[in-house]
Length: 186
Image 1 (spheres, rainbow, N blue to C red):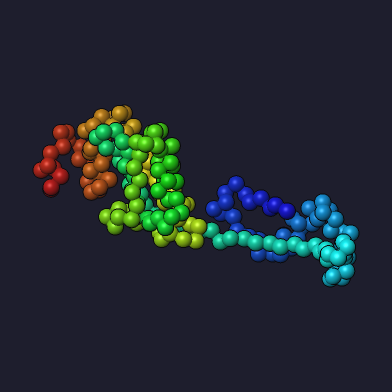
Image 2 (image 1 turned 180 degrees about the horizontal axis):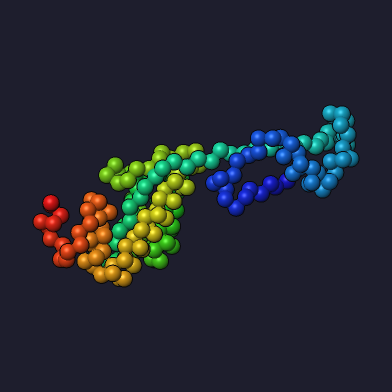
């Protein structure tokens, strides 16, 4: 029996009311002869073998903790993406490199993903099946920001893009161009 989760698996929670599971399961029971079963344990045999029917349910608690990543393009045109996450052999390097390459439209050989450097943005520990989801979303966001920054430079020009970056970093809006170091140090 398969119970499909909604399309937003990150918001799905197992039903608290067991009758929901029974309602869902009861629609599928006729497929394997549930109504024809003998209710007395150990009463159904095929030759020497005991035959039984059973139903089980399980859910695995998904978790996702805050995580950050940083993405940049180097002078040689390759991408460099990093986070403080660690890899205990679960494939984080591979998955994040593939994800960044796809999001940025780069050949996978032109993307470097680094982990476990405390100078990089925060990330959760490895384990519990949550690591790929956390930095995966962070890498996605970092790559989107990088693309938006490139688009901004192309649309408004370098000086305005720098002014915008100064505003986001300091909260100060500098409207006179060119931007000088004196204006930044005020």
